[in-house]
Length: 152
Image (cartoon, rainbow, N blue to C red; front, side):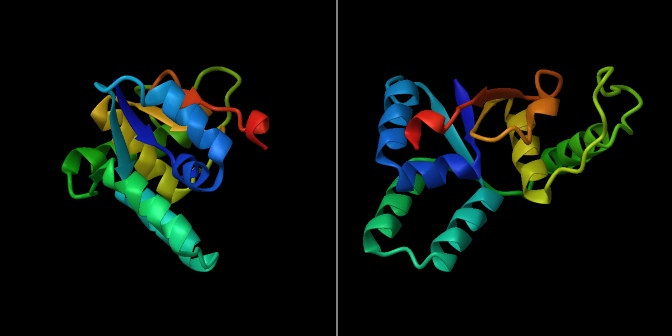
């Protein structure tokens, strides 16, 4: 399986031991799984580390996790096209693929759009702890949603 990690997954792996154990037992037991992180998520995690003045231990944990991921740069025309499609779909402006009945248009964060675009192009499953991508599934991307309540 191919997975794209949302930024919140990486942060939880660094900051929450119970979550990290769960993630390892659930996703890392299969050596054939591939994990991707978008370039924008790498920027978000780095920014959070700086803003929160992470010490050596958290920075070491972050670097260890990032070393195991395939970092996806945004230098591919397919990602740009997918970004545009997902943004238009989210706005209810994609004539060929209208929003399902009862669904309203929504603005997505620009970084979330890139994460979704990469997930779509890679034909991967997005692992996330938030519901910002729910309107895209199953039409445009696959999602594994993890409820963080048991880890708090």
